Image (cartoon, rainbow, N blue to C red):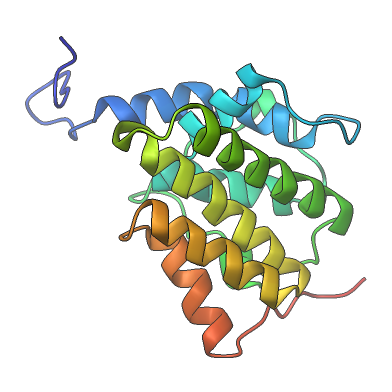
Length: 185
């Protein structure tokens, strides 16, 4: 039986198994999203992306990773800590403009992971990861200025999980006409 929460010490923050699984698979998901080539991700990579996208903290780390101009090593990516880490400026479309091809490929691969989920495992237990992957895909589209694609992806993410915070943020940004304000090189 999987415990509902884990706490190593009484004064430690509570960790949920889904967040732990997301943090563990984050480096594999980062690698899958930026791997060379345009071919579809293998099943194992889709599962890693869906698992890593199940928690908001790992999605913030994915956004920071995908938008980084220096293309950091995927194996070194760690989950976002809301108590210690500042919110990634890229979440709001601020900072240096990310590599457009990198964002496009990663967004399409996140959408592919969501499609795989819809055809292979549309269970309620994995809906948060599927919604998270599509929310990352919608953010990538928004970051590229493709508002129609961002809106469509965000709406489908909210259909998978109505309370997804990232999909809701992207959808509100699109509806408000707010786009990224990247610093051009």
